[in-house]
Image 1 (tube, rainbow, N blue to C red):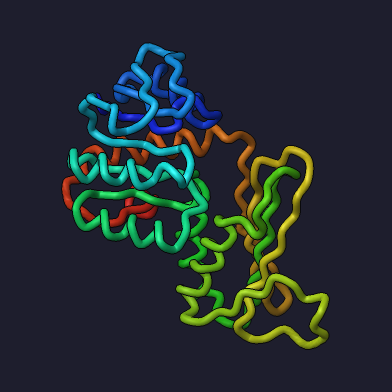
Image 2 (tube, rainbow, N blue to C red; image 1 turned 60 degrees about the vertical axis):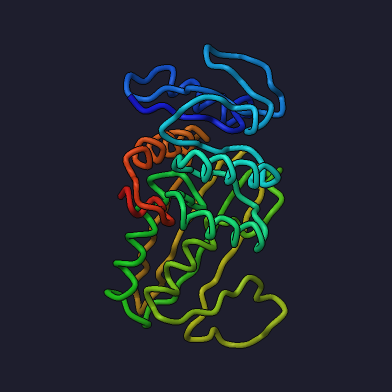
Length: 249
């Protein structure tokens, strides 16, 4: 049985993870941490990490970047693996995460969906096969309330293309420049509307043929399922360092 401490337990994603763990026979929540410190399930809920007196196999964080410092201190002190699902960290915070990973195992991914991370691996295999005769365009779609554009996942996919090619220039806006597409361009376009949970398409456009790799999330539950899977994986990791979904895949 894997015991986890869930940070952000009373948020939307926290509630999903609580339900998934409640229906599982191999993972359970030992304690929750949330600024809204109200007990909604069988496990105890604390307002902050310094208050937590529970032993666990891993910490899963789906809260807010502002909580990072206390989470890192807790995990480093207790020697507990950490799964970071929160996004929007500053460069300074990313440096703190890398520093902490020298003491404890830390899992971090732009997207917790196993499918998206499999898509990333497929991109890395497709690029060298197709070569530079194929232009790459990435189109991401999200709900109308999403603030940032492009999505972090779109950047992750573009980085995968760039890594596999050994070169790449991200182009987000073409309307202001009237010129032919550059050889190393990786186009990234964003769509915002309705209640779209998340859709990412990677288009390889070559001479007389087009190949498209696509992932569609119909529910945020895929991210919660990925977080639980990551927690179970990290519970068995003893070696400090940075880990991501590619290690699981």
